[in-house]
Length: 80
Image (tube, rainbow, N blue to C red):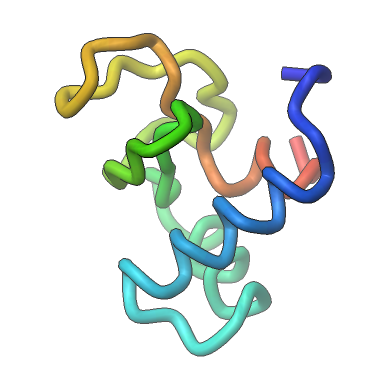
């Protein structure tokens, strides 16, 4: 996970907010903190599949591209 650039993290978090209907990153992270499952996104370039995963997930299975590339918003934002 440490090899993900800051620019890619920001881009994926913005995409996650847009696809899940959150006004901003604060709303997304608050929702992730308050629920048992966190919004998560695939980190594969060109794949923006989103789902809900465990808050500490950093290698979840992506049903769209088949990789273990789903990362929760909390991990992606560096909170976990």
